[in-house]
Image (cartoon, rainbow, N blue to C red; front, side, top):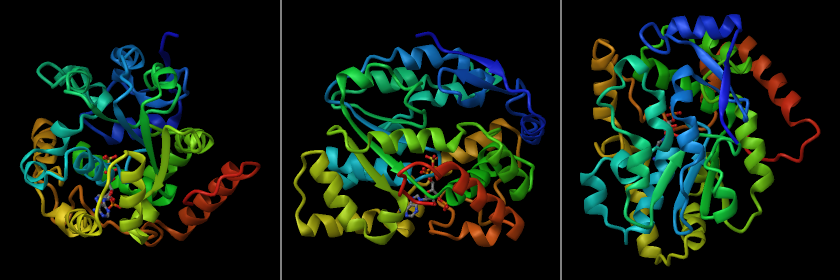
Length: 323
Ligand code: PPS
């Protein structure tokens, strides 16, 4: 099937596009298939992503953005690499665990010279580790026939959306207020939305033998249990001493202070490319790392609208993931 898209004509999409100032000047498209909102640039690569050759021994990590992807990448990389903490601290996670469609988020105007993330993902030695934020319809179609191991991580939509707002401010210099951004989010006018397409479609797939469903909230509540469950899924044995070492390495403060996981260089490079001043104090990729804190940041009115939107989307489903 070929991937195409149509310009998203919605006043909130125009407002969001304008809020990015330098970025996404060509606006957003809605893809077919998938109905995913993406910057228009995505269409340059969407077919290559969809046709990406998959291998049986790959390990794929799929999430809606800001749902605990980096946290899980670090865990999976370590499990797949004999707990090599030294290399993990020396090499940026983006090199160790490529982000498949990343190149397609780079505006066409500054794309020359940007690393080809699709090639990086393809060229890894086996077993390859691949991160993606795409919904099933846009992921490589061979995923559904070759059936490698896939880990999906879900996070409460309020927390993921709020984290995504700060991410866009930090990396793309977004100039909207949190409530303005969340309004765009609820209207499915933000890149990678609709949130529910990703979460509900993977919820339906969660009992497939090659799929593991994890949540950010479980990781916060009992990281040791998620480490053991993920290791078992990957056919890796871990001793209790190794679980303790992993818990220590994967703590919020360790990952925040670790240049290989805190994306400091990536943030700086993006801000320089966009001629933005250094990031405002206190704002970093490893931002808050909490469950439920977003409710205190959005207005009470937005919190109510979010609750209604959640009820509207889970009604009639058996979804019992994080809300
Ligand atoms: S991305 O850009 O989509 O890959 O972002 P992602 O890694 O999915 O999500 C970033 C959020 O995860 C938080 N995070 C952590 N929380 C707790 N403990 C650890 N170790 C950890 N590592 C990352 C990170 O702080 C972002 O959430 P917020 O709510 O913004 O703090």
